[in-house]
Image (tube, rainbow, N blue to C red; front, side):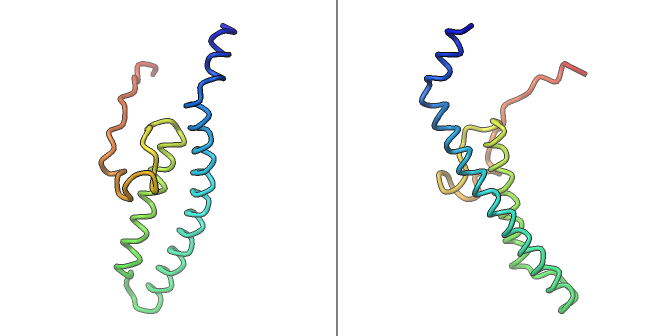
Length: 104
């Protein structure tokens, strides 16, 4: 058991992933702040014009998808790193691994 732990601790790929997880956790925090700005702009648009702004709507959808991709990466559901290490809209094309839901 100790040998397995030592082997796991010496894997450079694990440490690289941890580093990128920290980077994307910080990026995720910035994106969430930007999403609040989108929310405020959309509320202002709805109050002033009576309808949602299509450009802000599309940008908000894109940011939401990006946040989803970051969360998938942080929770080990995908090995595909989010933008800027992959295309911006790659999340829609991700094939997530199947999980075994036998414990009910």
